Image 1 (tube, rainbow, N blue to C red):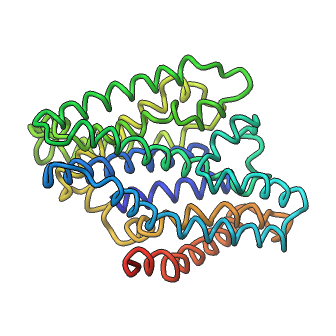
Image 2: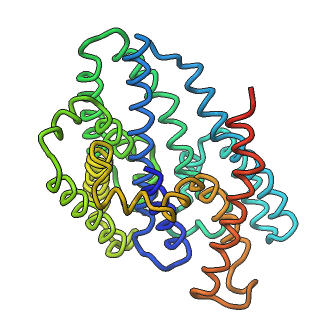
Image 3: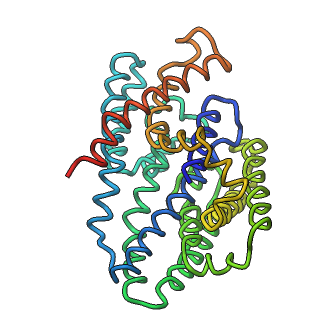
Length: 342
């Protein structure tokens, strides 16, 4: 799972640097992973204890995610004030309260700030996906707590509701108008919920039972095909210039990601699992959250004009600086609070 995170964040880094047209699909892989891991933890707790401690769950999520987000948010404001253009500072001050409220996506949708054509001027534009995940964390555990507590059929009910919710979300994406641009369907919580819910579905017992007959080479072959398919979509897609993505393509991408994750979780010892679990993707995945948080402010504050060079040399510098910021964030902020704080 860490290896998948590592590949997802690398795709996003390359996309924002202008080198991988479909790298934004790495965010969908993040969503599916989040749904899978969170739902798996919730269902396991319900099976072991008969209930779900929602306060404890939200506390762990807050301790894991909020310290790094807070430091990045405040630090970015200071960096924009010191080095950014006046317009960038104005946008940052306008967007910061929404970032703090985990509602950046709806702020951008309401203000009609297009993801594809205005992101370079908004230092917090990447936080739309963090907002979607937080909104999911607030609602879905409540649903699972009601469905799974003390019920023998809890997992089946959870699976059925996740599948139904994913289909409703797909219908919302397809039916909502795309007249101005695709920002509404790309950043809306309702239209992106299918990625998180398909991951949730993959974590349930019915999904595991459906995959149980698959064994050995068959699983490894399917994992390889799915992984190659996801990679191909990252290379072939081109953002808003690929309208089929918003007519079902994103759903198919998320469905393939959910199938891959479920297969890898059941049989991690195959070739695909060993490749994804190798050192480099795993270490990237371990730092993926802080890497995602810091890369975009660094990209925005260091355009080609500021560095004096572009292309791959600029990309190498930006990724190196993002890695340094991510490592410092983990070592100084995230890990001490996550593992040491009361």
